[in-house]
View (cartoon, rainbow, N blue to C red):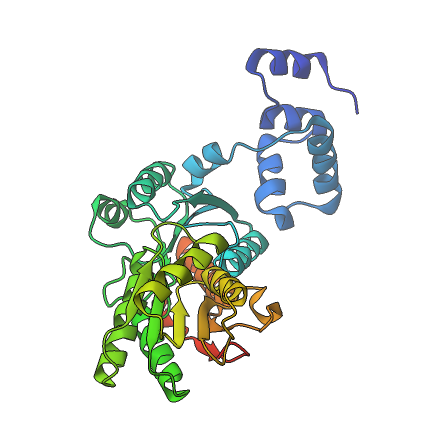
Length: 342
């Protein structure tokens, strides 16, 4: 199909093919092009094919912002996640993206790097673009960002946590329950010198507090703890074990705030000639893909991240399309996966 002179002039003048250009080249009305893109079942197969051929030949991309202004729908969902590198959050994000895509929505991803300031900046930018929904990793504490979200009226789903006061909808689990259950698990294995290696984030802190409380109530004293700060690498796990052994050389069990830290601990233990699990039991968090393939295989806490992503997506889609979501809070729970390190 050859472009008309008018179409070429339009492209030179505006810099982009428009819906009117597509309609003219296909010999249909602009509203027909819109229907092909948004409600194709309303258009006959022959006309739909003709319009799609023009779209393919011209490279036309619809202006979703303009369509959103007309219909109050952007068909865009924004997500804020702490990290995407070697991330426990990836199954959630992949399931979220797949479920949204199948329903005709696109996912926009922002990475906060566990920084409250960066998260605030991301939320301000996201709200200004008025997506159909917002996905948050974790719960948002009182802040300007939370106030902004409440005022926006945009459907919000918080995940990877639990709170009695969500902004809107919530799909998650209790970090305090995890910390307490891991402590009981290790004590039940006969461990008496329990320790923690954790990163500096709020969810890891709540697991650590609950873990230490169960240990104290069992009469086993204080829990030796190493905080690796913002670092969540294998190296930081190796270095943390060295620091921990300086303050608690008799530690016989460690709960790590991530599987990657646990991998670092296991690696350093092997270098130092410490036998896992005979001398030192080890439990991670997340059950990421490498946990079962470690030698020895890592005991860890499993979260159903994929189901969390699917359910969060369905909540946002329902709300964006005017359907009620009830209940609006879902506790997916967790499980301790016992492998060779414990």
